[in-house]
Each structure stands twice: as C-alpha cells, then as structure tokens.
Image (cartoon, rainbow, N blue to C red; front, side):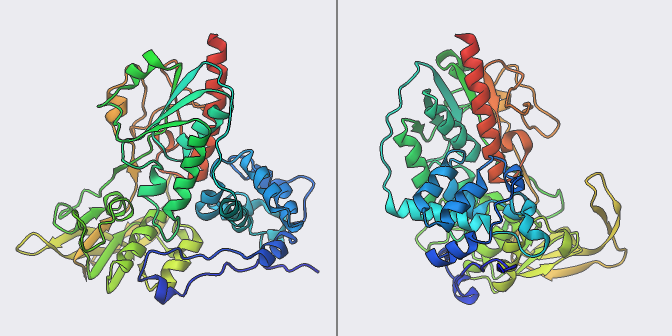
Length: 459
C-alpha cells in the first residue's frame, strides 16, 4: 500500500538559517522524488490540472519522474509554464493543484510543487541556456514590466514569432520575483536564469526605463503592434494611524526591496536599512512573513507579527507560517495597531495596540474583527513594518489616454487581458491587485493568446 503521507521537504536548521539569507528548503534528492511521484494515482479526470492557473499536465510529468525520465518531465512542464523553478518554490500549490489531488481525500496530497522544483532544478543544473532559433513573423509587441505576468506573456509571444521588447523600471529584470521575495525563499540566480532563457529566445530586455516618464504607452503604440502592461502593484498601503511618519517605520515593499535588491543589510551599503532590535510587522500575508523573517536575519532580538484576525485566518501560506514559527517569530493574533509611538528624536519607541474579537462575517466571508473596549496596550518596538497590501503605481494609468481603471486604481481588463484601449492589454497584479505569482502567469498566458488574435485580425 502506498504511503498516505507525502515525503517531507528537507530544510536547514531553523536556528542556523534565521541568521543568513541562504535558501531554507534543500529540495528532494532523486530517490525521494521518485518515491513521491509513485504516490500519484494518475486519475482519469486529472482534477489537479484544473487547479493549476497555467494548466500544467501534472499527471504526465509526475509519471515521467516515477520512471526517472526527468528531462522529459521538464519538457512537459515547460510547455505551459515559463517559470517552473520559480513556481516550484513560491506557488501556493496547497490552495490550487494539490487542493484537488485525490490523494488528499484519505491522506496528504502528492507534493506536486516539490516535484516541479526537483525537475526544474535538475534541468537547470545539467542544461546551460541555449539560443533558440525562432522564425519571426514581422510583428512586434512591447511588454511593460518584467514580473511573472510579463515574463510569461513575453515568452509565449516570442515562441509565436513576435519580436518582443520588455521594459523594466529597475536595473534588474524579474519584478517582484527579485525585489519582493527574499533570497532564502527564491534565490535570485534562479530568476536570472529564467530571464536568460527569454533572451535566448530573442526577447529584448531593456532596464532602467520608467514607462510614463522615459516613454509612454501612447508612444509605444506608434512603434509596436500591441502593448502588454504587467507593471505589478508596487505602491504600498498604510493604515493612516498616528506615527507612520516616524523614523523606523517602513512599508514592507520598501523594506524588502532594499534588502533583496539593494543589499541594504550589508555594513558597507550606501543606503543601509535600520537593524531593529524589537521589530513589529503589521499584516498576515506572505509579504508579512517575508518581512518578519528578513528582520530576524538582520539580527532582531524579537520580531512580532501583529494580525487583527485569528491564526486560523492568516492568509499566508501554511508552510511560510510554520517556517516563521520555527525561526522564533512571535505571532500576536487578534491584535490591531492604533498608533505608533515616537521618542523626542522622532524615532519609533513603541506601538499601541488594541485586542480584537471576531464578529459577524464581512463581504469577504471572513468574520469581521471588532475592537475590545479597554484593551489598549503598548508593545516595545524600535522598528515597524507595514505589510497590509499594495496597489498599482498611478504613473502608467495617468499618462495613457483612454485607459479605464477601477476604484482601487487597477487597470480594468477582461479575462483575456483586453483593456478599454485598443491594442493595449494588461494582466497580473496591475489588474487584480496583489495576488500570486502563478495567477499572474496565467494572466500573462491569456493575454499572449489575445494579443496574437488581435494582431492577426489587423493583418
């Protein structure tokens, strides 16, 4: 009888890894991967595939792993996924493909994400990036941003013969994959490998170009047959409470960007980030987990995650929460900040909070947190990181004619990426607000198909 439990992911010791930025998860070895793959029931109706936003042929690649045909397994994945090594690490499989795995009915689902990572890592270690000769069709597309939706869209269009140019505002391509996700979860060399694969297909990547300043979407439409906007949601939100302008208060976006992209934790950094001793992180998503774990690695003695709902309702991946607990991150559920306290020099010295209880469900279906009167209390803190969400930067929408946006500032686009402006398509976080990497990739794939149809209809 096959094992009802999945094979655990080997990880580094928590008290060793919380002092550096090396990758936490070590990955399956060959024997473990093969044994895990053999747990797959190869279901006739393939429910796991329907749970994948990019529709990877999951049973097919897993069957090949079980037969030790690893490179063929990689080719199956890469037919529909542009970023297998990335998705194997950061995709929330437990809420998508693995959530529909039949194995999970009477045990634990097959570790689909871990097998995807194994296959991708094995391919990348053995196979250098090679130039791909693709016949061009004489049409061109501009892609704004270089995050997961943009990289996926660019890759799919390049395979169809389009000349694709990607424009990135930062000095390194990869979008949120490089500035938002820490090295210990997603090594930057893996992201750069995926970018190099695109370049090998003929995709031109231009960095340090701010669309809306250096160049506008209107300008692009004069040169390109279509434009895809995948510029993400990098504008941080704040709570609007007293003390958010004090020294030592960061948005999670700034905090993570300075650490991940600018290496501000180094002693010789030109733009150092404060090494707090007692750090409070406000929020409960994956970004909050990343910020808290980074703060610990910067040497914080105490890191507390403040979340206004219960632990059961934390939106972060269970795996990330477990890793954070192992790394001695403290969780303060049913707690909400009311103001940030400062000393006479304008530095953070504490955070005032109030206890919460769960009331009736709100419009999201979750029970609404309600303040408990008279429960105000003060937590010691010399740094506060706000991780309560982001929205799209208004620069592109404010400099593009005829581009409709919603009340949140997100570009309005249909399921195929079509916007109100002919020839302009959009997808990923700039449309949905902050979401997952794999959902952004799915949007990029849908937009690529739509762009191909649009350009062909104009020919």
